[in-house]
Length: 388
Image (cartoon, rainbow, N blue to C red; front, top):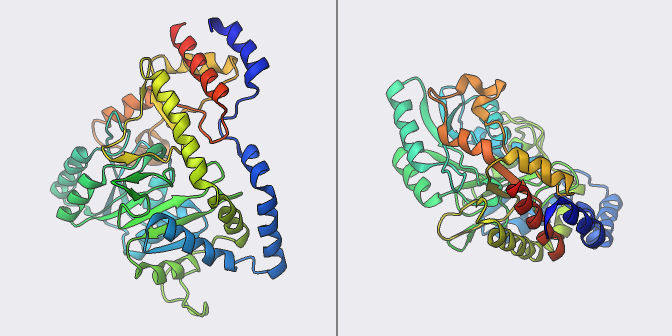
């Protein structure tokens, strides 16, 4: 194909409308099963703490290799609860990348702790272990905060370098809470996200690879003993009878309807994950000569919650392919340390790599229902836009 006109014609005659994330196609596939599960909730009437919650937790643990899974109201709640359970709060430093969604920093601040932003690797876009070590040393030298935890983010679905991170955390006595909000289905060294760190938080926001039809999340642990405390915190810090408060908590429950939807989606998740990998393989093959697709640490497989790459003239490409019918997204054009809410925690000198990546990062459509024609058309459009 040559030129915008031919690409536009191709979109009308062969490709159809391209969705960045296509929940409608997925729903058509699972609609009958979802309706049956939702009707079951209506029939038993346990809209909170219904049997679907227990079933989901058991299947999440079995799927990921986690020793325990606790369903909760959102991915943000899944980050806050383990921090509270560990007693992390005022005076504590929690290290995290600034190249992520704001929920990561919000969770740290809502726990009462102080975020310390860390730079990222320019190829994986995940937290840089070497810079983490530098930030820990700086905090110890300053002496005003106590290093307590690190929150790596598996950005776009690709697991962080947990081999290096766990060594640092062990030496520095840091709690590792993995932010796996985008990485369900990812793996490292043949172990699934959910079993790569002592604790993993994940999100089931509708647009995620495994998403509910509303807000929902889960915490996955390598230690069964975490369950009781987390269950208490998610129910206002009450005891098992839910009558007496035994610790500080908040309303972080997942409702039974969301669990019902997730259970039906889990039945097709592995097939959808394979389809995501097929899309990514074509993108990598077709676009690596004009862009820099996200790299993964050795032994890692992405869950491809998103497909991201660095590309020159990003804004021009975005505007040009939009005219050709190709939707895109930019995650994240503004890193956290440059946002008003978090600028007080911006490190001196900024985060050079984070700022460079934010200037040229681009995400392409990624979902299991992209047709081969659509994937080829997207690649054709990006190639054409990069030449103009």
